[in-house]
Amino acid sequence: MASVASAEPGILRVLFLGHESPHHNSNLYYPILREALASESIQIDYTTKVDSLSPENLQGYDAVLLYANHGKITPEQFSALNEFVGMGHGFVPVHCASACFGHSPEFVSLVGGRFKSHKSGIFRATIVNAQHPVMNGFSEFETWDETYVHSNHNENGRTVLMERLEGEVREPWTWVREQGKGRVFYTASGHDERTWKDAGFQRLLRNGIVWSVGDIRRSEWEKRALVSPKTP
Image 1 (cartoon, rainbow, N blue to C red):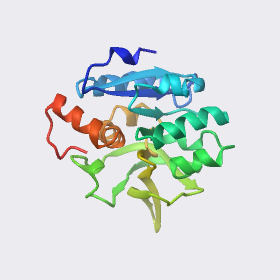
Image 2: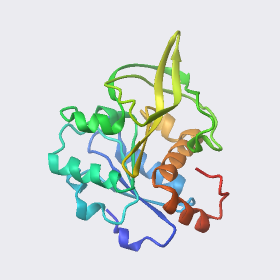
Image 3: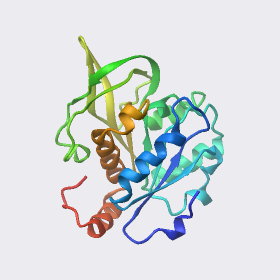
């Protein structure tokens, strides 16, 4: 894992926590995202170790992105992540992250919901809150993915941005939460490379990361990236 000390001012620093598994292959998808966001002044460091969630290791990061199927998190590891968010940093759980750490109701609450079941197919999730900053410059995209259904919804501080429509079912699909001084961005998209290679999905993650880090770090990033102040 690269050292955060090497990051330059204005670069957003993200810790991508994956796993060693061919299912939801984070080892394959991490480089796709890293390359897609490299020109966006977003530095992504990769690890598969849950013990990377420590106060010492999280120092210097702006956000943690979780895409894995880890089963256990210790109270100390969750406390480090929860305090990291509460102090004003970002947490970006993606797809299968909502199935992680099921023994921890506090983690489920932090995410905003838990994976329950899925089928699969080609579909397009629908934007239901186009005014939110994360939706700036983003367009709905169609891809093959798993059709997640969630349970244990935590609506406290949560705003749903996208839904998956299946008949009369309006399943929350992409949402944001504010907790303490920090922010959480979640999307259920992302089963395999068909989604990870999609420019729309990459834009969604980019926007989610930039929003999650908070206004001060976003402003510093904007100055470096020379992007519009309207960027999320």
